[in-house]
Length: 81
Image (cartoon, rainbow, N blue to C red; front, side):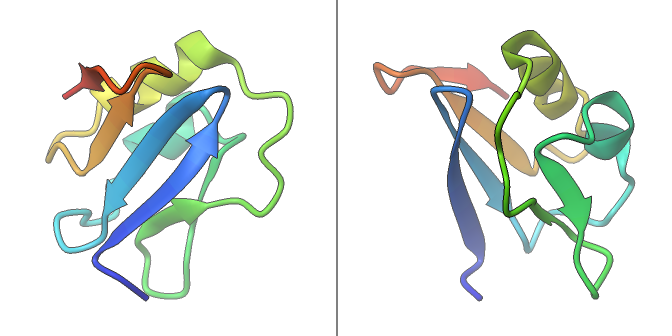
């Protein structure tokens, strides 16, 4: 798996930097719909990303204490961090 995992979630592009993520789980606590832990305890995307609340997604990514999550809007503008 690459160092950066990228997915399209709720119209946004979300990137998970797997080298920075240490598995605090704040993103999963705030919005468990798009995220889960893998076998290594690192955040990854769920296979099904339907029904994502965009505001909850952005807040979940914003709360990452190590800034392992990046959110880009549909125009490519960085919203988080």
